[in-house]
Length: 181
Image (tube, helix red, strand yellow):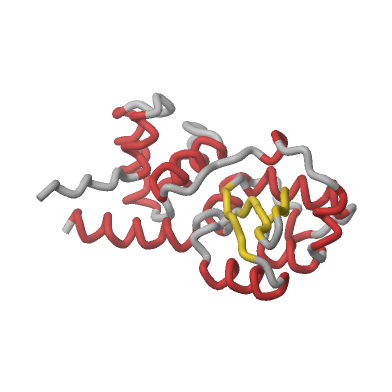
């Protein structure tokens, strides 16, 4: 039997990617333990990583492709398929459609409820990629020509901690707490 590969934690992935060193991770873990919060949030507040670094690491951890929204050439016909209300509610941007499959970039692709709600509302299957909250909010403003306070946070830690991979990060935190005990 082939042994199951151990799933790397966020900090380990960031070190593996060369974004973070062991000493910085240790300082962040100490701060997290004393002040609470999510590791990604702590790393951002300490200025040790960027929002994109966290999302790329989480994308690797959960095996969901990351695609920067600014690298996409989004056709106006694709934008017209999806209402502004739906993209704001679930924080995603549609980028392509092939037959009945819509490709979207989401802030939290681990949110099964949101994915099912989007697919049902549009009557299409989804191919889901992940992007940063900042990139997706910027794209929503640009393509839907809206300004919304929900999309207006300048605090990247809020984007990561409250919108991006929220459920996945929480479950990893719970597991980390159990590992420490």
